[in-house]
Length: 115
Image (cartoon, rainbow, N blue to C red; front, side, top):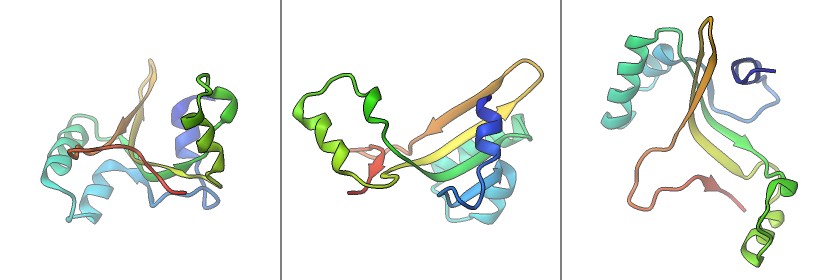
């Protein structure tokens, strides 16, 4: 299944705060930081069919961790869907599906994981 189909078929059982058109998200969220709003506005103007999913929560597949030093083993202690992806922009055209993870810059920026 293509990434566009997977992201657009997230239902009420999935954990996220918004999933829909980027232009609608911009209209509904005037409090976005200027840098994010400016970038997202340019993308929405260039590609009006771009969608966004916000605060998508995901699990860790322990089999995918190749480096098994002690720091990585601690991740198995996190329960549920501990990783939060702030923004994923996604779109498709006749040639391909595309998705982009956007993590707002902060001096010590990282993906949020709750434990």
